[in-house]
Length: 167
Image (cartoon, rainbow, N blue to C red):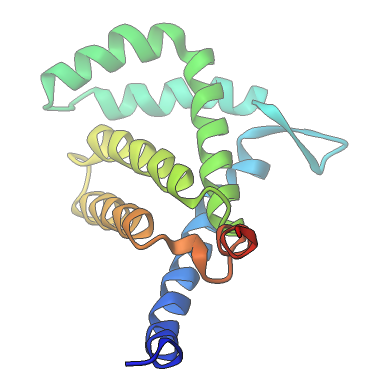
């Protein structure tokens, strides 16, 4: 099979993976405007908004109230909730980084791994609350692995542009 035939055969798969990467990236990137501080009402700054710093511990406390994963619950209550402002900043920045990297297809491996870690934690925090939460987080977890393994930034992404520039 020629190189041209191989590329044309694989192109639809690459475009499909790129489309999934962009859609999931937009879901994470919403943190730029919902969880980060906005200068002038539109320019995201690299720290959590006061609203998110105040809201995040309430959400987590509700999730931990009946969480059956004892070691995870102990970690969250003993570490995350006692350092809530720090973790509010980390989650907001993590979502913004994952979303930006995925949307742009830049450092897609890093973006997908950050998204994977966030998804794993969000899933462990809320899986017991509803079956839909379980399905969403497990699906998103699988998507993050697929984006990482599939090198999803190579099509319609800056990873591909940078790779093409290598001699």
